[in-house]
Length: 250
Image (cartoon, rainbow, N blue to C red; front, side):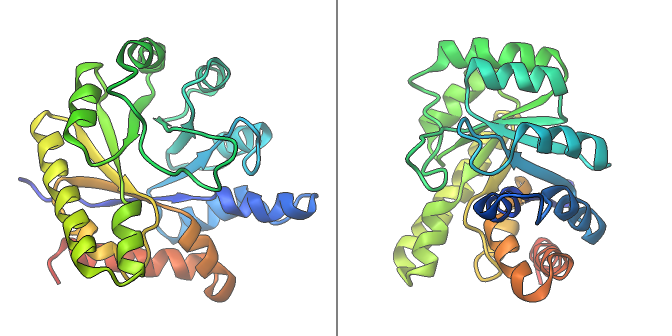
């Protein structure tokens, strides 16, 4: 396989979370996106939730105008979100599961049980030129279903791996990592592009980054949290270095 640069997408949702906690205009997620871009991010990810708990419609409009790197719009598979995506036609849309009561996305999308609806949902998005991905568990049946409905990209949910690592459950961590690796290979053999994300930190990113089939990592909460202490540019730069080192086998 020809080695390609591993892309870093920076999710700026939780800059908006802090802003919305008090109201007003600061901190500005667009400013965060521009700082991440300056620090070497390859894309910006933003999740426009149904309840608008962090990113808002106006944030999406401003991001589309301000950044020069691709915008990845995370969204649920609803009519409202489809209309918004078709109006803005961002570079990419990632279809994610969404529950109002969850703090963060708790698992992968259930593609295998909803193939027909999702196939019809993504068709106009692909027709408009958006790169469509599905945020799914590292599960053979979900990957096969995503392939059947014509999804060109999948993003593997790394949460179980990251949680096991943080809790020191090493056998579970290693089993989850092996699952991510094997399912990345499985999806790649279908000709699908493989991304990964959710919960990745400095401490656990490198084994995932070293997986040659993974083309992009999307990281948000940890980088925004680190930015409180070191600044966003420094946080992004350090993550970029760790990813590049892992990819180079160092």
